Length: 577
Image 1 (tube, rainbow, N blue to C red):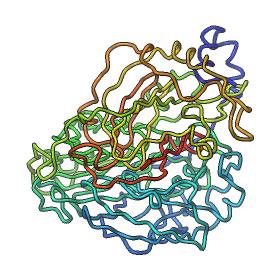
Image 2 (image 1 turned 180 degrees about the vertical axis):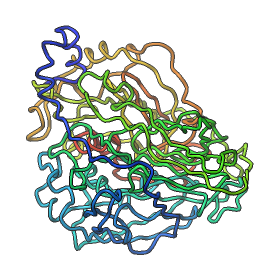
Image 3 (image 1 turned 120 degrees about the vertical axis):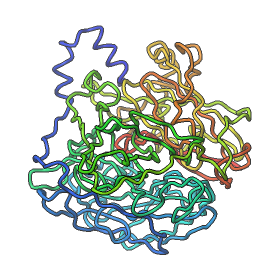
Image 4 (image 1 turned 60 degrees about the horizontal axis):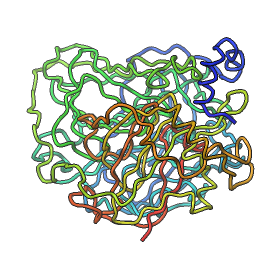
């Protein structure tokens, strides 16, 4: 078995011409979608409503564009695709019983039974489970990937909502099927409100809340067959990039906007694609919140980067725009991010330079004041000063076969079923303690890493001599795999736990960007980089935390590039009493 880094090293040493034929055989290509007009579809908007006590998860009929037909998709709460936007008030718990009423999978031809947890029955009798992403939630309601339930069955979710206002989202989290289930529609927004951001607005910040000037945007990328149905690879591939931008379920939509201040709650719900957003008018995006709630102060950006799973709370001021002006939300992120075609073994992925359009309505301008301070009733975010009780090194890597095909994406060179059955291969923090987690990316493209249960702070970022670290790390192995039928054989190249990266670091550590300096639960880890996080595993771990619960039990941490977490870039962790 080879790692991707080893293959790239071989390529440099042998010359690209020697390995290129095998590389091209290993890389699958996909047909382009039918040609579709841009900005002719109206943006669907799911304005916030209170959560119901029961929630159906069921098929529907949906069209992504007027030039495409209508086809079977999945949705929550009676919607044919995606789900309603729910809003709740901090400290007010809700109890939702969700019913699995799903039928044959719309992407039945893409159900890959070679992935862990996937069965042929998932084609006609599909499992599901809901994860409320960003929620400080008890383990039984967190959406553990093996706690799925079948059609005709239901599950109860208890959300205590004891955390600051923020942009959460809910989505399927079925083991081995997350990518497919999100692709066909199982995702929606969930907004927590508090005194700084109350339901209906009229809070101290003077920012929009609810219709018509607060608009959820769920960003995805899709591909379509010639008949207009959704297209997805028949067998698992390490990434998926569609060639059509889809926002709230419509391809390249348009939103008519008044000449005033709008608030957009944005989630990157794509499989693998990073979005680096900018406005064609060159006006600034004003970010007021990240994954876990408000920043201390607005951050004015010419471009906003969002990896899969990340969210941003953003203001756009259209008061100075001219009536009839058309402003395009653009994207210049390469695929894969950040170098695109420069990444040797990831060639020919589609670039999507345009996402949606805003058309400015007639009428007088109604400018609004942008708040200077965003935390009036909540404490300012300060760096966690409590000394971590433990520092953990966590490595992002993969395993290739002799034809340079990716067999599995991995964390710590440990497979899901190994960690699930062997506690010695799991991270096991104690409740109400602070730890430092160091994500070490040994791959030539970025990942987004997501931690369930608790938010964290980014301490800093630093480059690593990946060649030297990889060589030293590999010298600790091989390690015998503690499961049967592991991809690639009965060993992996590295031992557990990973090495301390300190001797292999390069340059100076860099603090987080201003718009990353808030509470996060999903973080971009760039190629050949160490990202250090400070993680409080409970409400009593340190002062001024944005959540109020201390839970013990089993949760998960994983890459939020969906094909990655499906095979095998996700591991359980235990919070111990």
